[in-house]
Length: 347
Image (cartoon, rainbow, N blue to C red; front, side):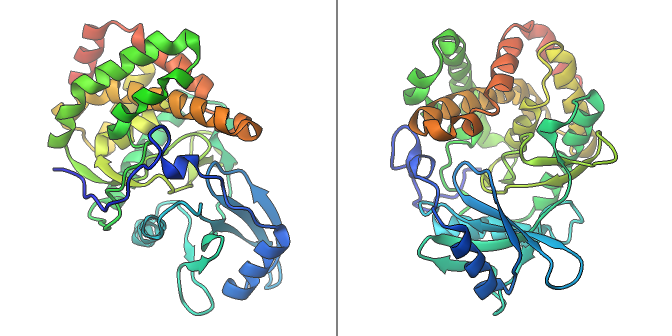
């Protein structure tokens, strides 16, 4: 089954309009005013890091115990229907009992506000420790796999006209990375090109897999861990990369951040088994799984390298996942291929 196309396309051959557009700019005072006027929320503001959008944490204390929110201003280059996709998906997930943000309506009952600066939304703020700040363990990776599978199950049946838009972070779009490869560090050029060649070889098989809307960005900066248990997932954030794609691509995204370079096969299988226990992968999906994991690592390295060159002031944040992707891609490339495929077939 092929993705729905809505006419939303990448207008920059390297990065796409959204990936190459500057984030919105807004003063704290103006942000506070928007929150008050449209949502009736007041409180102390704190800017949050974001690659494409502008986000503020609001600690509201004017109505009893503190309630925290996230005021989100979408990138002006993001089509309104794509922002609506994210909002509708969160509303769809409200019945799933999963730890995801809740959509707060405006004083007039709307879920979004169109402003000259971009689409404005207010979500609940989730408490927890960012996963990238916690000790990693096989148990945490299994918890992440289970959460990824449950989130995909929670989104099953959800549809939206904008879900088929072109997003370079979507694994199935990896072939379009080739013009961006010169941005990759010299010592990774051969490895990156080999990974992309392998993806191009398997890409025709994606059309025959199961497709649905998925989160598509379960990286350690978008996952919260319980303050009481380092192996418990407390929240999932940032639905900004949602897209309709083969569901195994979403599993590969999450797995790419759980591969231990010191034990690549063991850690990859640890994730795959835990995911498979909640949402069984079909044989055709397991055969492509490792290559799709590698493709996500390649995507992380390539897009981050290109964006860091374009936005050097934000480079530390943009490059935050590159070291892990570099080590993981190298480790996967060095695995014995027949042993890897045999292990995945045995899931």
